[in-house]
Each structure stands twice: as C-alpha cells, then as structure tokens.
Amino acid sequence: MRSTWMWVLLVLLVCCGCRSLNQPASASFASVVIVNRTVEEIQLATAAVFTEAGYETFHTAKGDMVFEKEGTKMNQIAHGGWLEDGSVRERVRTEIVSLLDGTHRLQCKAYMVRHSGDSFFEEEVPLHKPRSGPYQRYLDQIKKRLGS
Image 1 (cartoon, rainbow, N blue to C red):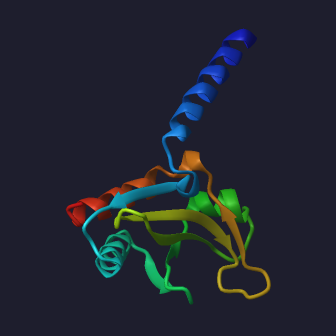
Image 2 (image 1 turned 180 degrees about the vertical axis):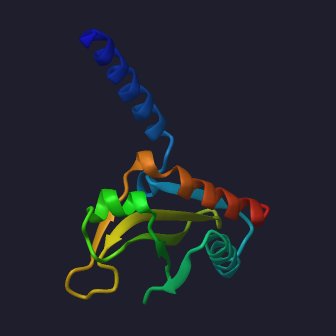
C-alpha cells in the first residue's frame, strides 16, 4: 500500500512539473495572452466578467484592478476559523502586462482575506496553483469575450 502511494505521488510530481514548464514564469497562477486589444478594452471586459461573477471592483494606485467578494462558508471555516467574528473575503488582483510583440498578458493572483478593510489586522493568504482553476476560467471568458 505504501509503495502505491509513493508511485502516485511521483506521477503527480512529474505531471505537475511538466505542466508548469509551459507557463510563463511571471504568470504562474492564472493568465491569458490577448492580441489586438487595448489596455482599456481588456480592463472593461475584465470588470464585466468579474462583476457578473459577483465581485466588487477596486482600482489600485498603479492602475491594476482588484476584485473582491464575500467568501463561502467553506472559506470561512478553512481560513477564518469556526468561531471567528469577521468574515473571510475572496480577493483577486489582476495585472495587464505589455509583451514585446504588442500583445498583452492578463494575469491574476487570488487570496483569501481575513479581517478585510481592517488597517491593522487585515491578512491576505495567497492561494496556490492547484486552486487556480476558477480564476483561469474567468480569464478564459475574458479572452473569449474580446475575441482574442
């Protein structure tokens, strides 16, 4: 039984390692490349997709977009604890990176946020690559919406 689990673990490590080689190093969580669109068009489509998914939109000082919504009960249990008073929020930070060939890469990172809005206690807990699926689907929807 132990050797079976070791083989399963080895196969998972090899598969995950191979897949990560295909991802750009700086966009390791979730990303898409968008061609023939302006930054403004990408921002509008991004805001529309995340708003439709129930997120509120915020802008940072450097122009990146941040989306946030209340976490699920499971998020609360996993990241906030059973008896925690404050709710856990889901935060997605997006960035549009201009590439050398005139295209853009839209990338994002996702976080669970404890004590959101509290200047002293707020804590962002980053989600890791295995949890990127829903966010990659949002970015794929944005790319599809732009016809890119």
